[in-house]
Image (tube, rainbow, N blue to C red; front, side, top):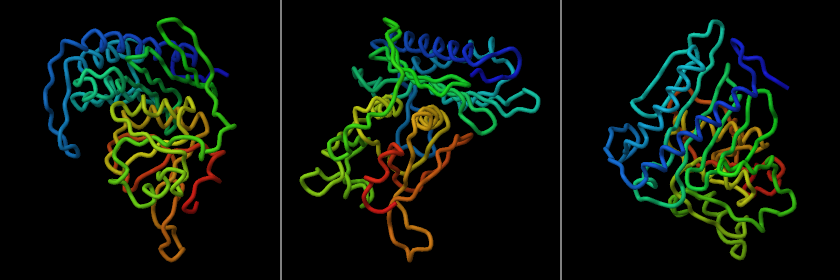
Length: 300
């Protein structure tokens, strides 16, 4: 099915264009990996925040192609707080751009955890998204009008259609966190104990860097769930991973009191929706496939 977009664009054309944007950004980032200049930038919600010339160069690649191919679409991009309003009559359609996802990992010259992300939001729905893993060359994406999420490597074009692994219970899988579990909520600490100690999963892993690359491990069924700490969430970080997660059937639950249940604490479903501005996630959240919700301990 091809979604009809403003002008003469079709879903397949948009899909090819966002893949090519991500590919060019990945090439540029990798080319700058050993020779870059880092600069600290002010932030309202991070103790330390940086950008590099690689961030800037990658964002410029996206902006150049967007200005040529989607001149009336809005843009929300990380660097320079860029905001371009949608000029398409009767539409609220915009791209989000995270040109270099995992800047600190990039600055450490890590061989993992460095990504690039773009999404397309139309009237409150994320209709396309693309996440690129700079170091492996892998790209994860879906296009407008399609229900399939693809994984392929732009170095060799080998690919697959992603689907969840239904055979292995969560008790035999790992859960992935971005930080030490001791700084999460009580609910997170309880379920991330090793299975032998009463936890929900076989064990846990901690991985920093790109949130997109981290989430890709869930989409590929390398881990059974991803837990994110409460805090500020930006459109460019959130929209690409939210779009792909929803397309694959994942849901999100936050650790908070149940409403109307005497303040009992447990996992409460939280809608996965696109963002147009930075918002606060008040509680820790777990992202888990809808078919696994029955295994989520602590109440749903």
